[in-house]
Image 1 (cartoon, rainbow, N blue to C red):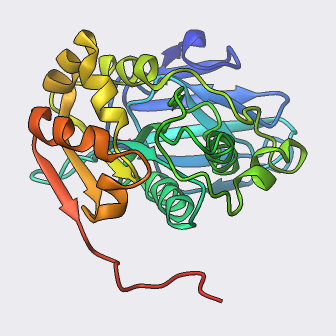
Image 2 (cartoon, rainbow, N blue to C red):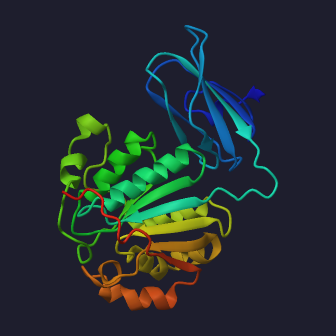
Image 3 (tube, rainbow, N blue to C red):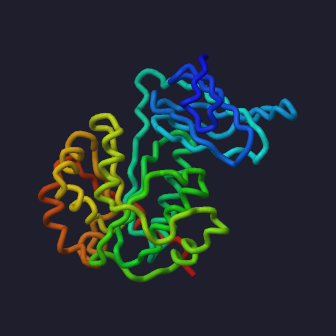
Length: 285
């Protein structure tokens, strides 16, 4: 390994880039490491210099420029990352952008939590989150709170800036988004325009590698395609779009009907509908 101070926000890093990393953090609760050299999975180990003990945590997928790591505590720690090569013929780890209208129901929050758990297990790479509802402004803050809870508070986060699409019902998001003391996030009800965030995420990915996963009203994809650079990147970087259920709610209600025909006619990449779970009730009182 070679001194590679620029790869870690702590400035103290030894690395065989793309294969193995050793990072020292003297203080603070978290730091970032540039793992963009490889999309393989890394084994995460923490070394306690005060006791000499080593603990192995969940794996992490490479590919991120600023992969966030939360330390066991605020004392000094050494992080050791060692690449676990993918066996011949093993499937690639999906790279996912999650597009959600989080607010009126708990399915979006659950889906985002599952994505984080899969990312912890090295089964997906979560590239960013897009909040696409314009009528419940606190959904974006809840996305940030969930991302922060799972140690990914620096994930790119975009938001629809209009107010013509979305369910205004708020079942839980204001309480979570405004409680920054409890969840330690920093976004409450405002994030950059999704049309600027989507391209920034896509530009950094290999061709035909990204899965866009929508849970809710997918009109953000229309706005992305209306942007010339956005459509270019959809064609170049996206592998597929997977949508939760094509029922009337997601594709026709709450203002979505104005976008549905344009979306289905102009979307240029493979498109999959997942109706699974329609009969599974969660959180029922």
